[in-house]
Amino acid sequence: MIDDPMDRIAAALERLAPAPLAAPDFSRASAFVWHTEPDRLEPVEHVSRIDLSLLVGVTRSRDTLLANTEQFAKGLPANNALLWGARGMGKSSLVKAIHGAVHAVHEDLRIVELQREDLPSVGRLLNILRVAPYRFVLFCDDLSFGHDDAHYKSLKAVLDGGIEGRPDNVVLYATSNRRHLMPRDMIENERSSAINPSEAVEEKVSLSDRFGLWLGFHPCDQDQYLAMIRGYCDAYGVDIDEDTLRAEAIEWQATRGSRSGRVAWQYFTDLAGRRGVVISG
Image (cartoon, rainbow, N blue to C red; front, side):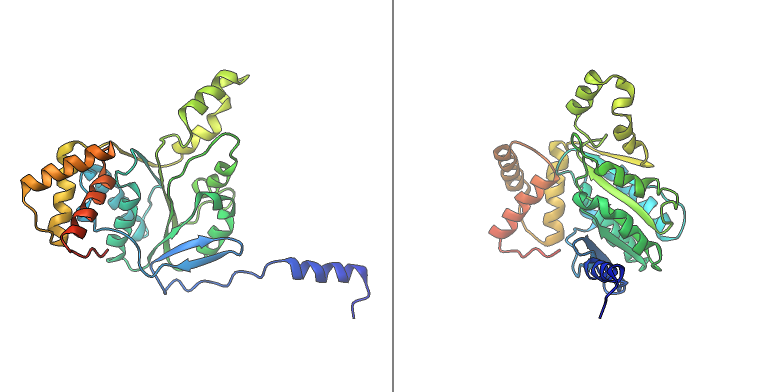
């Protein structure tokens, strides 16, 4: 029986403290998702991705990120990468496709998805990854920050690493619709209302400067849009003549009011369904 008050307090704290996270079995899968409450890395048995060859109109970004990832997988120096730009143009698809392509050659490469809202826990995640005998692409999709959002401070732990430094076996790939990770109107509002405008947003804006690679994704033109769909048709065995594909795809784009890789895939999904073709990937 515990009589000493300090012993009772210590026992209560032990009950409240979460059990330490068991070392994950990284051999179970090539991809994992980080969750909190409680902390855990859940394996992803089947990653939703398309083949790298099907990504049209992003040749420069593809080649740059592929080379960077191959360097990293070989244990050579590599940069963190920010993929920014137009919605639906394949930013996250490119990250997943490149991981799949490089992992096929370098089997020790893993990808770990981290949600933006879980950024405050990134230090705990890095401590787990740091000691693992694998190399990790830490993937944060749709990254952005709003007014009074302090999550950006946690991101610095990955980009700068603090006193310990970023683990040598971890590189960060993030996607965002914004090059500076924050809305333009927020930048202008803070500059106009701050006592020292040049310092008001410097800390947040400079986050993007900490990425060694900036890869821009811009809206596609009609030829690229049609080439994407033709590539999907050829890859999945959907037979359609050029005139019909062009007419239907342009009408689909008009009803959506936009043209992008995502819209191209949505049209192809509808087309494959009408033609009775099963899409697996």
